[in-house]
Amino acid sequence: MSFFQMSTPAAARRLFLGRSGGLVLSGAAVALLAGNDALAAKAGGGKAADIQILNTAIGAELEAIAAYQLGAESKLLSKPVLDLALTFQGHHKEHVALLSGTVAKLGGKAAVAKAKYNFPVDQLKAELDVLKFAASLEQGAVSAYLGAVPLFGNHDLAKAAASILGDEAMHWAILRQAIGEVPVPSAFMS
Image 1 (tube, one colour):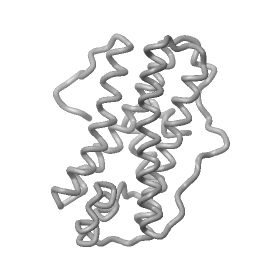
Image 2 (image 1 turned 180 degrees about the vertical axis):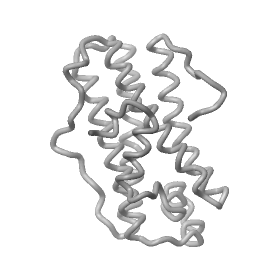
Image 3 (image 1 turned 90 degrees about the vertical axis):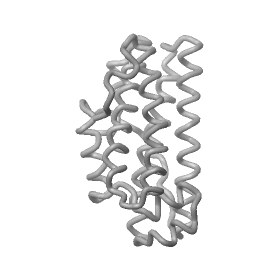
């Protein structure tokens, strides 16, 4: 089952954590992602573990890119929704570029896209279906990053992870609005 086919945010978080060996991002990896090489050096952490975790994140980002491509090619999206999907896909592409650069900086080889993803294509019959699918995958990403933020003792590292969480939360809120749901359903994320 893919990260983006999870029925609940908690299931998506469990899958993400399972793929990364129980870790989300090490302090050094988050510091590198934030562009703070000095902080990364202080945070320490094993390069092999960081590369594995970063490649898990790259894999999830590549899957998101493929999901948005599926939506874009479905011919089910109106022009404004297609533009939004392509914008969000662009964000995920930027994440892959940064994550891949970080893996290279650590001396590793970045993950590559799968030849085929197992998306629920047969369930995507209208624009609303595509939007709901995209909202569920963004909700899963929010849940995964939400689980990561409290793992950091260093406030700067937590701040960097929260930045990624913020991007995913904005995507989710906008998609909720587009499907006619309250964009921010509660005062707290879970």
